[in-house]
Structure formats: structure tokens, C-alpha cells
Length: 356
Image (cartoon, rainbow, N blue to C red; front, side):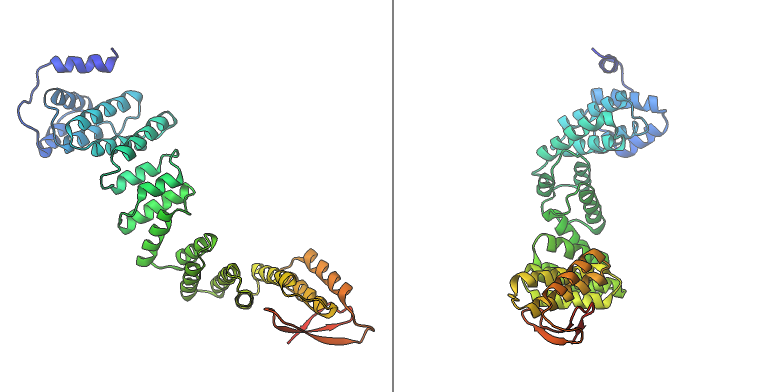
């Protein structure tokens, strides 16, 4: 028998200063206020040895006696208290939650296994009960739960704004931003507190998930809340990428162009424009040398705007190789159809492109 068991056995045999009915929470407060931590601990276990059916507040206050201790004996004592609390309660959930909270407050490497074991017990035994926000947040701290398991545990319960934000933060820390629960929480927060960063980030998530309809909607909402040309450009570029997923090449090019015009210093817009023009090379059936020359010049110019010198030089070289014009003063106008829909003026071995 360990020391704790011997100690408790001694208490069971000792006489008690209080007998009879359950103690009111106010009585517990008053009694504990007059005792030292050691005396308070003795009082708690003496009372429970004879009268275990105390109200929940009694067990909660008993556990608080150990809040400033993180040694193994304290953790064992709190576990014993919570086990006794479980046996006399109609549901184990409050006791499991209190024990999990205590372990979270003293979360160290030596309590990690015990913490996660308790978190799993709480999730299994209380899954049919209405989750408290505290239980959910404690369970989210256990690294052993997968994103799919957390998604199931969070369910569709409605939470207040602060609880939603807290759970979002915990899911993000776990790398679970692509779960349905994270999306639901994010949308609930944005409904009450719309802001550019949140709307834009949600649009990005929807696009990455292939949900182009909602992605477009949230990019558009974010654009309306943009406070600068730079933010506006990010939204236009997001819409361009969304339209690309829908194979709406013309729309993608238009919004990418709008993005580059809103913020000419952002190289990402020009890189994406070059990418779309490269797509055009594959799908637009440009066969003549004039068309290829003009297309490569446009791609080279986009890379130049993005300060991608190596790529720009490579496409200017390809343009020169396709250039069919003879003589240094010759020029021609080439209409690139398909989704590009642009007239390009080319000159023999000219390093610039004139567009109309």
C-alpha cells in the first residue's frame, strides 16, 4: 500500500468534526478560508471519507487546493478526488473535465500521456452529452486526436463569439484549418465581425478546397472591405485564380490584369499573367510564326514586370526565333485570338512589344 493509501486509510478511521448532511458551498468556502492548505486537504478527505455525496462545488474547491502544486502526489490526489466524484455523480463529465483542466494547468512532459488518456475518456464517455466549450478546448490540446476526430467532436454545436475564436485558434495550431468545423467557426465569426483578413483568408481556403462559388463570393466581400490598392490587388488575383479553376481563361486574364494595374509593384500578378499566357500556348492553337512570336513577347514582358529576368530572356529568345519578318525596319500587327484577345505589334528582333 502506498503512502497516499495509508494516509487515506488513517483518515477513514479518524473522527470527523462535521457530520450529517451535505455541506453548502458557502460552508466550504468559510471552512477552507480558516485553514492552511494542509489543514484544508485533511478536512476535504476527512469529509469525503464519511460523506462522499457532496455537491460539485465541494469537489471543485477541493481540487483548487492543489492548483499551486504540480508534483506527482498532487496529481494523484486530484485524480483520486475526481474518481470519487465520478462514482457519486449521474454523469462522469464534470469530474473528467475538472481533472483534464488540472492536468492542462500543469501540462508537462510527464503528464502528457495521462492528459491524452483522460481527454480520450472524456470524448468517449461524454460524446452523447452536450459538450461544454471548456471540454472541447481541453480535448483540442491533446496532440493525439486527428483533425478528422476533432472535426467529429466539434460537431455543429453553436458557440458564442469568444468560444468560436478560441476553438479556431486551437484548430489552426493543430493544422486543422481545412476541416468542416474550422470553416463553420470561421464563417460564424465573420458573420459577427467581418474584416478584410478573415474574409480573404476564408476565400483562400475555399479556393484551395475547390469551392469556387464560395471562394469568389468571399474574395468579392473582402475586396469591398479592402483599405488599400494592395489589398484590392490581392482580391483580384484571388478571383483570377478562382476563375482559372473554372477554366474561365478570359475572366482569369481580365482579373489578373486588374490586379497588376491596381498594384504594379506586386510581381505575383505578372507571374500569374505569364502563367495564363503559357496556358494559351497549349490550348489556343496558335500555329503561325507571327502568332507564336507575339505570344512569346507577351510572356516575356509579363516576366520582366515580375523581375524574372531569366524567364523573360528565355521567352524573348523564343520570340526572336519565331519572328518571320525580314529586314530591320519591318513590322507587323498580329491579333491573338482565343481568350487572349489582344493585338500585338512586332518588329524584326525588337525587344519590346507594342499592344493595342
